[in-house]
Image (cartoon, rainbow, N blue to C red; front, side, top):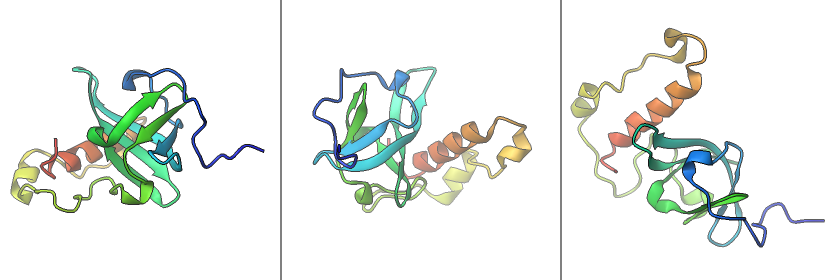
Length: 139
């Protein structure tokens, strides 16, 4: 029986974040299963990769682009174990934050997906996470 909590020997060829599918397995550098890809955070127009929201046993976690070591056909490798990734919208330890006034001026807003019509839920979550991430001062 195969071990489903560790990375397979071959994750396949390197892939672009543009074709990374939700549900793709995520492993840390030690080969332990961190979770699965929940959302790819990117600027679709400029094709800039910002990071991943990963579904873990303990809830959603955020892996910024600099903590994503590789994206492959059959999995993703992140630099740290899942328990060392931050929750989306939380400021990582030691990060510089911007003032709440500056964030409010950016229009982080609190309107819910129900205010935006059907089908907006995923976009709303992605934009909400992206807005909170920008207000941490990390880029």
